[in-house]
Image (cartoon, rainbow, N blue to C red; front, side):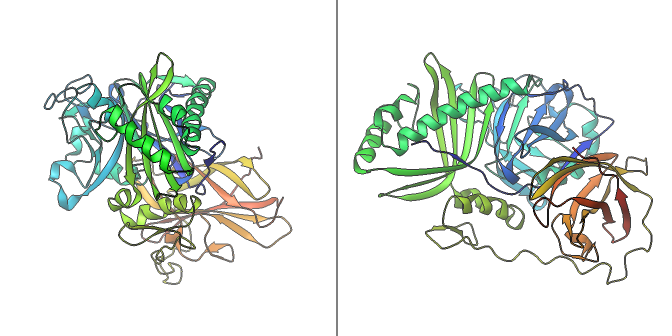
Length: 488
């Protein structure tokens, strides 16, 4: 039996933030060599920090399996260069980490700004290498002048208050990685694909042995230095052997598989549901791999029940993303507070927060668009019978570098039909959104590349017209313009 990977979650918009003050020396047509696979759907983001460039980049995996950079931000790191080794050495650690807690402004001193995210430093590999220390965060600052210098922290990664708001939208606790290095290395897509396939084959081999209760095949996947839950390897496998004997078979389903590579190791993470005659459990698993003389081996595992992973989330923002993944794993209910109950008929979520009152009805929409936003370079990136994926450039034409915030929509009218559809998918009246705040939020200093998906009203429908509509945060209509369509 071969365990397949479950595709989850519909595509979300993402922004490609281009700041002219940031240097960009990313090799053309290449990607960070750490990003082998970023999973599927709304969680498919990774943060990449290059200490030498004082830059934090955000990457996302698209539906077509390609990985693209979607945003860049200034970042300051540790006062001293090199990888963190000891408490107090004022270095930022280098490796693959995950965010495990959100701290809001009311919990923080002013030097940490309006929000902070705890990283899981020291991670499993760090502990194997004897590194120590604690309190490594990604956080903001109320002292923006710190970002004029590349190294100002005691080990954390620091960005501006303004940028942490945007970065927060890309982070899901226990699922979004941050990869930190002194200088990022890059590989071409073909090489990354081959390496990803090798790791995925190993994961499938391990899961197949586990689900069929093939004890010898299962044990073969683990390194000699493996420790299970702090126990010695022999004690851990003695317990596992008893479990295998008592379990006739097990069904193991995984979703949103991420594969990340360090210098000499790999971190594989995914949602997992395990079902047998003994138990039924759902959660998030981190698996640590290293290359041994006879191939890849597991040197460590960490397991987080879903309730624990959800408990640190900003509930209204992050919960739907996790819920969509879990719904594909079977009959799962996430109750308020993060408790997970299985064997329910469907996953139940509380109603979403109501959108703000209709801005047009309140008379706060200007009759004519303002001059500060421009949309151009609309292109259909890919097209299927039921939907199309587009790309476009949204620019702040004020030219002063001040961030402009608001909501935007892309509205499509289809040939031979009065039906219109939009991105985001919202209620339209006379091809206009009924509430400006139901659009997709944007913040632009210069320009951003926007991508998204528009559903077709019927298979094979063809576009007649595409328009971009944008509103400011105060309800002013900034843009209502037809777009020139470039077919793929």
